[in-house]
Amino acid sequence: MSDRPNIIFLIADDHRHDAVHAFGNPDVQTPVLDGLAEGGVSFRRAYTMGGMVGAVCVPSRAAVLTGTNPFRASTRPLPGDGPGSLTINPDLATLPATLRASGYHTYGVGKWHNDKASFYQGFIGGSRLFFGGMSDQWRVPTSDYDPTGQYPAEGRQVREQFSTTLFADAAIAFLRDYTGDAPYLLYVAFTAPHDPRTAPPDFAARYDPQRITLPPNILPEHPFDNGELRVRDELLAPFPRTADVVRQHLADYYAMIGSLDAEIGRLLTALAERGDADNTIIVYTADHGLAVGQHGLFGKQNLYEHSIGVPRIMVGPGLPAAKAVTALTHHADVFPTLCALTGIPVPATVEGRSLLPLLDDAGAPWRDSVFAVYKDIQRAVIEQDWKLIRYYRSSDQTTGSDRRQLFHLAEDPWEMHDLAADPGQSSRLRRLEDELSAWQRRTGDVLSQRSPAEIVTAKEPGDKSPG
Image 1 (cartoon, one colour):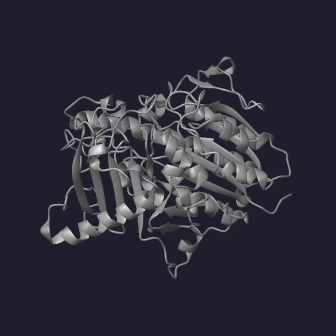
Image 2: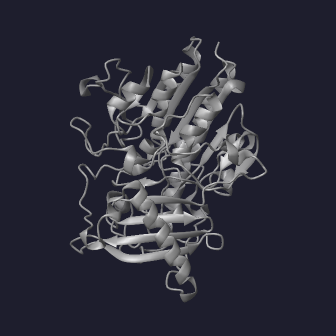
Image 3: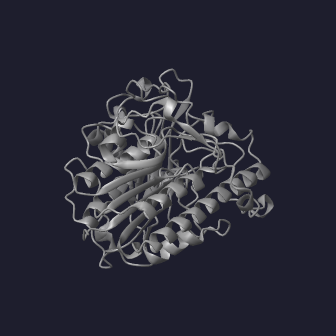
């Protein structure tokens, strides 16, 4: 048997950072995630860095898998990828391929919203594989593992079972059946709590919309054109947004999360039954968050905290218990952290940083800021307690806005008080703009090479497909 720990990597779809009971949300019930947070490390300021397409989950997952920024992580769609898909940059190492090359048995379950070639290179086995963005949650078209890596359409089967249970069953079957000596990576990608939010009836019944607490930043409509006010996600609720509509959507959202939490509990029971609980690193995170009524928005095609903030919990050997980390981290940090925990060299292409130094109570030096992007129309920089969001107009001047928002997150975590026009913050605003511009130049952001008048918000192929 290997001395290296096993890894179970759990990634949800659309789970925003505050929708965990242990993180202060009184309405959603997540006893299993709460238990993981109590038994391990929770990173309370974990971010996705966004991407250049409306299906934000595609570049977000690519960033997790490659440990790089969204401009490097993905390439343009290749023939056969399908609508809305982006190919992971083939010049980059991926987490599953790196673990596989280091002797791990890599097994994938659930959603893979990236190219099939990168899955083929990373995984030795898998089941109930869904190559796409979304589907009916009770009729998911999935494929069995194809050793050729082709996954033809005629090989898909529609499984008439709730998606979260379907994927959890496949993961549990792996844990019960695996008899190899090599450590394993079990990568489980759920489609919950993405819409359609049709949770099993017993979970839906637990959330009465009239008892749901509304966040304080609920608005009937977004106060200005952010360049993406009529994308698919924003059309899930009528305009103007009403309190009753938002409560119903939140109840459905929390029911999906509650069901997901319960299925993860079943998976952890199976892990304990095979005797691997003490030698397994468990990662729980999400590709991105979701507005669900905040700021008058419903989707993730924006750079507010509710849409770029994600939960991240890590439990296992080498990690302390009941530790909450408030340093700024992002998706690219997960890959090198798992390398550090398993004793595997970090590939040269990885940009993220191991999170292990943050677990030292002495307080190791860490990054001062994180950045996020959305298409060619929004950019953001977060510097500890302050955040700048920069908006751009499209080249034809029909969508978007040439404006800035400045928020003091320490005093205004709901981003309700824009200080960009405050004369007392002018120097801070300029400094954050300079910091954002420098990052854009370093990463090769197209906006660092073009003026706002040249920016085009043309839709990507298949952009109607959500992430």
